[in-house]
Length: 149
Image: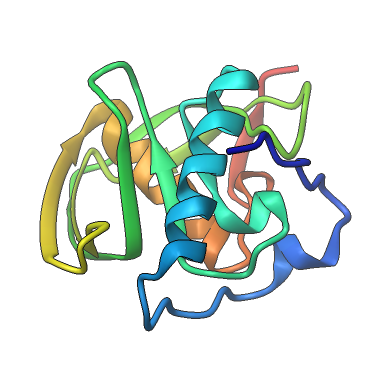
């Protein structure tokens, strides 16, 4: 597996809507492994495929509770609200306060193509929303309500 080159703000791929994954083949599994290595190398807690130059609906997350790979993630419910600071590997050095749901329920496919649902609160909910935004061409800087700089 390999660490992939990150894409940074200004790269047009970060503003495109990613395509759904229709077949979970070796290429997708290698992409996920590479994204995992890249996220850990960069000390991130989440990474979306567009951030490594691939316009597919794949995200990886690890907020300290173990590694998650989500294929075609989709928020199905959200509750509450929380404002907290965010940053992004694709926008180094920039932090800002962003309003996100406190709790989300996300439907996704696992590596075997099984449909799963994950519920997240607090930081996990924030990271799920942040990474799913990437799949829709939205960056956290589009949602900043207060700069932390």
